[in-house]
Length: 251
Image (cartoon, rainbow, N blue to C red; front, side, top):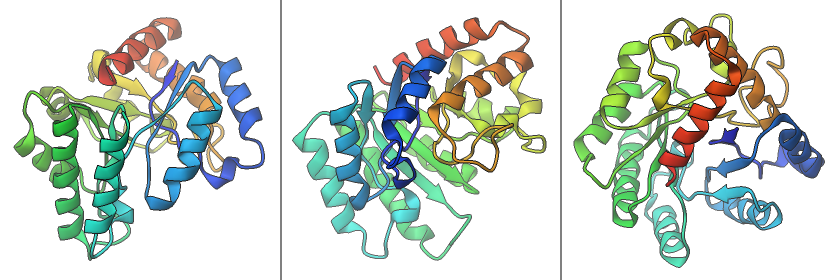
């Protein structure tokens, strides 16, 4: 399995990170992609990447970290992208769940970071909590042959999924698919498996039956099993397809 979205550098893993990584390996997770959050997460993310050879850092500013005067934040992102190779710009996007007062700034920061991804010809990792349509419209407007990516933590319906697929993007499917009232499970059978990748968003959004606890990549197996059951296919086949998709996404 390939874990396409996990914050392995989070403080919640500080006391048992090595053990957590070992549990993930035993569960069959072979590679981990780590989306950045803000200025403060860069150093711990790089430390994890240095320590564990199968972890890969990405670079971007999470929408909830976008400030009123965000230009300095994006200068740092741009500086890092020029300084070394990254496989993606992320985690970027829009989040209107907590606070809508910086909608304008979030949208501008998203546009700038999309252009950075196009310049460096790497994919984007999109966060779109309570903002799917707005995020989709900006991506559609700026889409060209140099832009691809993933709508992380997809929670929409089959129609929304098709919009994403028509853009040539992937859908990050995580713990929400296991939630009894998550609303996603009922649409999985109608979504093209060739556009799905697996993620946990650890340490957040732990899947059932671990819901409410700290999430970790070892639980990717629970997500894979749930999707396989909904798709009525062997879990091994589901893992093979989604891993191939992840490799294509970050190629």
